[in-house]
Amino acid sequence: EIVLTQSPGTLSLSPGERATLSCRASQSVINNYLAWYQQNPGQAPRLLIYGASRRATGIPDRFSGSESGTDFTLTISRLEPEDFAVYYCQQYGSSPSFGGGTKVEIK
Amino acid sequence: QVQLVQSGAEVKRPGASVMISCKASGYTFTTYAMHWVRQAPGQSLEWVGWVHPANGATKYSRNVQGRVTITRDTSATTSYMELSSLRLEDTAVYYCARLHLVPGGMDVWGQGTTVTVSS
Image (cartoon, rainbow over all chains, first blue to last red; front, side, top):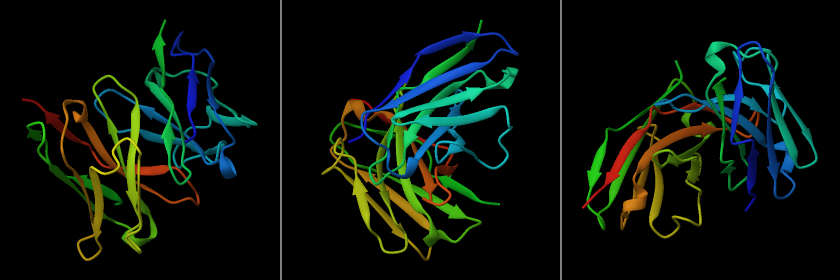
């Protein structure tokens, strides 16, 4: 089972700032089957990034994903008010798993 | 439009069973695996299992293996998740979500079903 560790747990930033969220996998993620999701309170998660770096349909280009070995990063270039939410990484191999989440809150 | 619509909230006693449905529409049901994910109050997301509607193949998380059964009815384009021997810690919102390895990721989610286990 692949364990995903997200950091930091909470990120306090202001609108317009850059957010950098990390996700470390305990072992190699096959075919870069790594996704990022955004979740707002009381709502289902929303797919942002798949394949480590590909934006899902309709996702603004201020969201980007990258990978370096077993380290994955989600970057939000300039935070908009609607971006303050919880973000999860997920590996979607045959037995998917999620990270513990990073909350991006308004400073 | 593509959507997944789940059945309503459930309240159960410990030791009981619960079955949740997920009705798919707007796409070819057999081309996407259907996954089930749960989220306990204030916690992260936890993968529960999946079924592939094309052939009925399943895989389950070790955390619930032996207590969970995920099925599908292709004529009704519906997936079902049954969880038995319910425990207090099974209290969560349960989501269904479709996934195709290409392009990837769970791109459509149900609205969630709250299951409360309480004595």
